[in-house]
Image 1 (tube, rainbow, N blue to C red):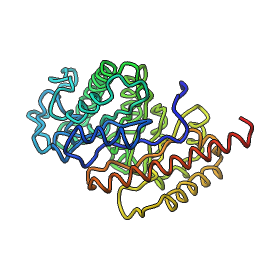
Image 2: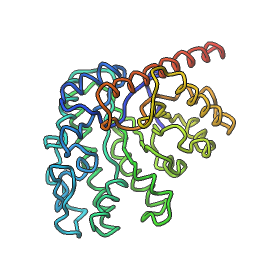
Image 3: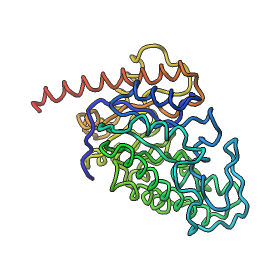
Image 4: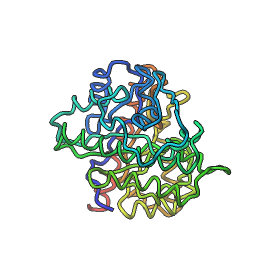
Length: 335
């Protein structure tokens, strides 16, 4: 695994924001997370910016409706057919274009995100597309969109290192009986998307709920993005090996459901408790902190703008505590 060059104790965001003004959303993420701003999507502005709509845009035989729902003309889609619109000029990518415009000429890292092939494949399957065809079409569409995404970012901000997360909430379903893919096919599908990105970006996989993290890590991400209390301690051996190979963990330490409070104290205690459990399971406590970033647990489209501001503020405060603790640990061991 190639080395990840990111500062200790860094914060970023995940996916959607509640804003309806693309320029205001871009300004918001740049101000709140200046070290690693994340390109937002704005589904409250347009249903076309929902994650499935973005992923399905341009698939021949699939129409994305204004509310973000899909209409499949013929369930026998052709996975070999190119996207009818491979660019980011369409309606689903208004916020992305505003973000890229705002970071033009930037030299510090930026974070991008796209829907993963497992999640898109499940959506196509639910629309009546046969199983094998649904996931083949999804894999090809995500790889094509990944190439377009990277090319657009490199054209706008050629000196900005890229971090790109593949968003796979569908991986939570892989833990249940009846999931249409076996573990090897799941790994292959996600790893093919990551392999498209790897020459150009630090790659991550985000899943907003419990998953079989051993399977997810076998797909080969450089960053694993997961919420707290989502089963990481049960997979401490796999997590520890991932850290030792140089992998990073993006901790969804700020919940996006339920009450938050106004200070990070309780959230920091919960994060520390998770690290304690992982350390007891054999993970290196220094690597757990040095190779970590802080995020909200998921996207924020269901929140108000003031609540989203609080979530990102708490993420920053936890990240600063992490940075201070990491610095102290390095001084203690003489690094």
